Image (cartoon, rainbow, N blue to C red; front, side, top):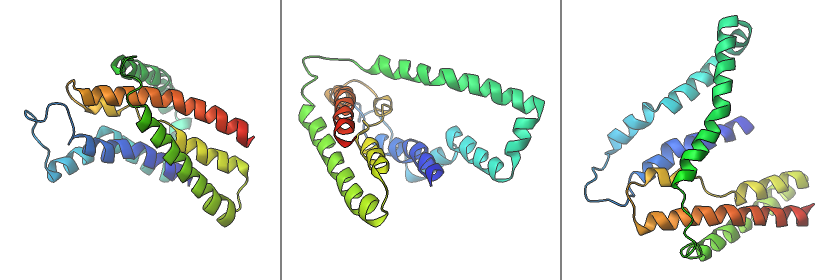
Length: 195
């Protein structure tokens, strides 16, 4: 179940979010819209999805032990692991470069951020009450995990897809920045109350 959730969280930005964000942007006039056929081709040719499904297939066929025991493939896996360790900081640098703190405009998205956090807390509370506690009978640790998952800020990949500069992009960047700060504060308060 956990593996399925991880796969869904990785596939969502590539398929759903990228397809939706193709329809938004600051410069709508000079942009050619992708047809449904082109979007499906784009999804099928995605290197991310191809490698992920190849990895799942190889793992299901028992290739995992071969890759870890063979000296050549083991060295490749070690190298890939080292590259993966530096990939996350590089991605954060690229995304962080796009984020601009505009203190004058930072409070503009505050109502939207507060509404989002309130809605997410409500959804998490309902899920915890009716499913996690009553239906499944799971303990407080699972309830804290649900709250944590729901109050996480939206993905920072969103501004990457929005081409050009416009007030909407500035609003989104400020929304994401403010959401991170308030999500951390909400998490600290929640864990203090729940523990």
